Image (tube, rainbow, N blue to C red):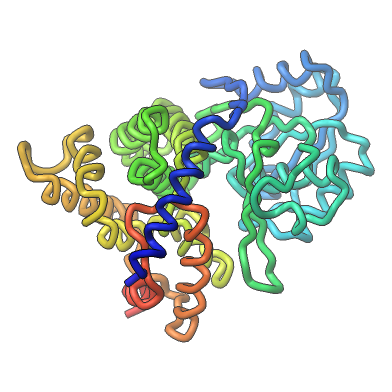
Length: 403
């Protein structure tokens, strides 16, 4: 167990952190929503006077033609562009540096990011490199992007990360096998488009994993000790939308309403966790991604029920409220019963979507380092409802070893 004095110190520290967060001047992106809102975003870029743009995306989206209508609209609006499609899942320092070189060669003064969290995160750091003229690693951590970034316009093509409305970007260091989060108000995109039509061709397994990623953001924000009324509003909206529409989006990917509602859910969940923070689910999932290249949404989905089980004694009323608001569990049930019903619903969703309960690549010899790293990430960053000691973290992670 944590020493009582250490827990008290961390609680006081996080109360100060919460007070500071409550007064930070978050400048949320101007947001366009609906079918072809991505084209409205391009027109907005033109109205802002942008003539040369770096498009940051991945090769698969280019091959699938997802960018074709936006490219045609940029041509129509007189915006010249070059496409950097070298971003892969869990973007690395080298990929960001390559994108920065392309941006400088093109003389682009703004960035259009199209894709999931990886292209958007990479675009943030490319834009930061352009303004700060220092190594990527030097800008990771808290509030180290001092000179801001280039204007960034984001078009998410998955409904999961919410990166289009967060102040965070995660960079992978493959040599050290670690993920380096950068958090700074300067990393907030200028504007974003939630265009559900761009998501209709997303495979079911990616739809499921990214949807559960958004659910993790909303739930961890809601049970955070840093939760506030304004974050609760967004987190609840996200949970309701996900519980209502994710199954349809997975089973009938062409359902445009389900896709648009999930895009909205991901976005408001991003707003919630940007202010309230996340927790041990993310702390552990980040290590799975860094060590085993596990996609972030999938890692979150696998880890979430285990962490919620552990956290329940300290957040049962909050989880119970989510159950009530989404009509999960017995009417009139106790907080503990409803909280357990909510966690079971998450397990049921994972099972229905084919998300495993264990991580095939997890190795017992890696668990001590994963536990140590996850605890270190969470200690002064996340206002978790219940702190973990190292032995408890190891035991929890071991539950996800392959059978």
